[in-house]
Image (tube, rainbow, N blue to C red; front, side, top):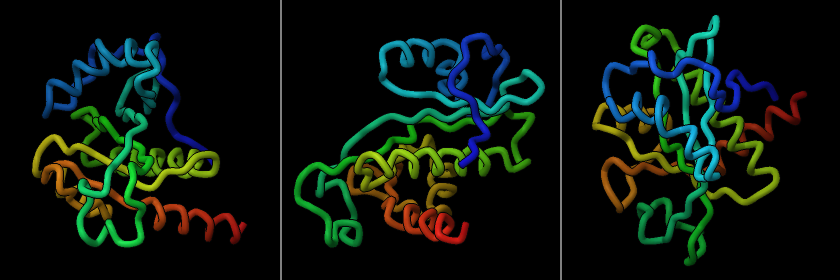
Amino acid sequence: MDFITVPFDRSVDRTSFDCGRHASLNAYISKLASQDEKRNVSRTFMLIDAGTLIGYYTLANASLVESDLSEAQMKRMPRYPMPAVLLSRLAVDKHQQGKGVGKRLISDFFRRVYAVSKHSGVAFIIVDAKDDEAACYYKSLGFVETNTSPLRLALSTNTLIQGYRACDSDA
């Protein structure tokens, strides 16, 4: 299973990264990601092209309780906190937007979630969309609004895992 990203690398220039939309995403990668790495709060993965950071995502562990989920998602789920992976940030440099970089990053993220799911339970993937446009994008990937907020979305990992198992058996 190949990944297109590399783990967070302090030596990469992060100060010139600009997603053009949310200053908090630019500030995170340039100032805070390193601290979160050291504290084991999250892990950031970077997509680098010719030494330039063109996109990144950050993941962390989380949990969901039954009341967070939509009615459809609650079916056949336990009534105690369920393990989840939080896609806490996803950003593409403004010069690379519209070129499929975001899709490549999401694919890489899904591969990592699948790899984790082979060793630890992962019931859902959660994302906190920055705005309605981002929420729309995640919904196009199958994420569903939670009861927490219209910008907090969740995706059951069952479909993802079944898809990867089918690919594994084809090999």
